[in-house]
Image 1: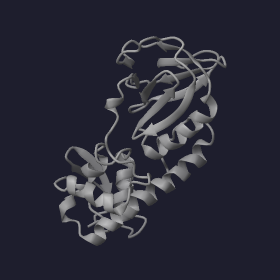
Image 2: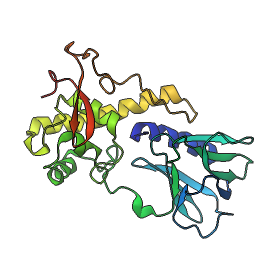
Image 3: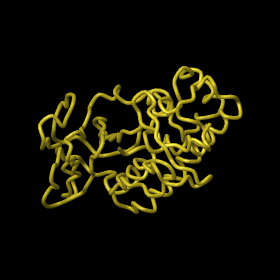
Length: 256
């Protein structure tokens, strides 16, 4: 599933290609791919902005706002010809291109209710200070670390892959309760969130270029999906553990 770094780059690329274009029509290709009500499916205004909120892509025109959620395997493409296989919906643009969302699992969708967007703080925003982070830790103090990092109404945009990388860099076990972290560990976690996400954005940008293709393998990750491989720090084996049903990849030696 695309997470904050992947979508941050994707949204920037999208904005550079569609800003100021008119959305002439929204076409629902696969029934059920549009959730909520649109007053009209035609003449939806000029695109003023495309931005990311958590794991959602938000479009703002001079007439309305809506969001796109790519879910597990949604793909974005711009085309003037044949639509890709498994297309869900498309935005017909005034430059004769169509912005098409396809998904082999048929999960990606367009939503109209902006209250669906997560309430959590954006971890790369100016409001994500250590002082505010401490308040978020207090809200989630009973959660284990893996679940805490993925709770979108606490911190928006982090998912399975980058939560594992953050915990590894912070040298913290996925099963640790938030309330068990001392001040030094809290600061390591805070610094790791910012550092990992910023580095990941650079890694994604190098691989994606100015296109829209997401690299699901993320070969630059150190522990996520590397069970049985050597830990890059201690040489021990990467293991997995379940935290409230979520699988975490970690090094039992380095992460305490």
